[in-house]
Length: 365
Image (cartoon, rainbow, N blue to C red; front, side, top):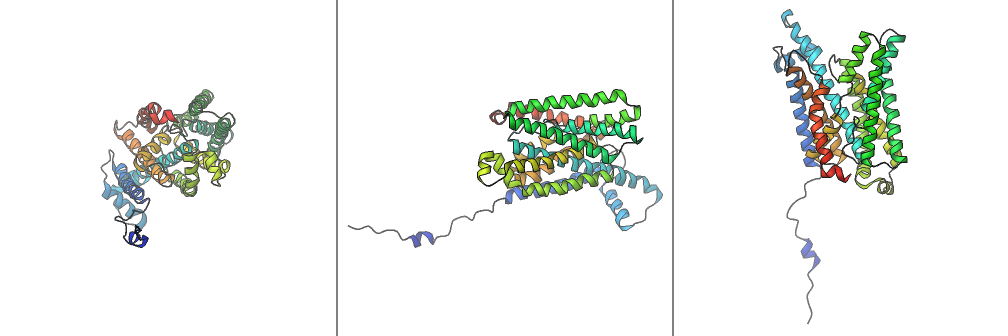
């Protein structure tokens, strides 16, 4: 008795019941929604305050700037408040938070630890010390602080600490807990050095250094917004190009990534340098703002997943929104007093950091 085989052509002739949704559609939808929320948040946070100004006034200010619309002298104060004070402050808060969050995403992925950030590794404190040292030297030599010298000094100190931390981690094969403890120790060291500088300077220099100690976006200007935005606009696309390599290192480890043809040391060095550059430029303007580089990536990862192709841009959005909202709360909750944004972010970030420490995921890494 013979059996009749089922013809393959019959089985293959039926189309699949469902069409597969292209990979990434959900993630890009989330990113698009985040971008829309960002635009609304910038408008709202710019117009919130004691001055009687709303979104219509902001649009009118844009018309005055770009189209040359006439306006009465009585409206001049509104234009100054919105265009010269609040809008650059809101934009600096957003691009600064976005930069710190992107740096945190990269460091967490490369070191395979959700507790890592520019703050917990000591990079922010080191960059702040470099900025404070440049202020002291600039005032002593030139009679005033130099913006270029401040940024260069912050970048060099941040790079030096990153080389020390990553070099020791590689040479000694440090575990996750030891690496975090090393970062805490370095943070304390550079905070002490920054405090030590304050004993040997005059009142004006002291006030400028204290600005870095608290972390603030007060006195934000369009030049600062432009520079931070330019650095972010250069580094974020580069990191997106390296997203596949970061995924391989983060998910498979160094050995597996090497077997895929990835030059792990070069990739790690280049992407860490980009992260340090983002951190140093932001810190040179805003001072030490801890936990943004930790909390921003953590929120983004919960909403969009761990694929760095989507985590990097969405992490920029969540970090920027976090710092933008925190600054708005700080300048309005006790108005006319202004609470430095670093304090507000720490109040939000500390509980999340504690939760990460005790979470099962952190314990596994």
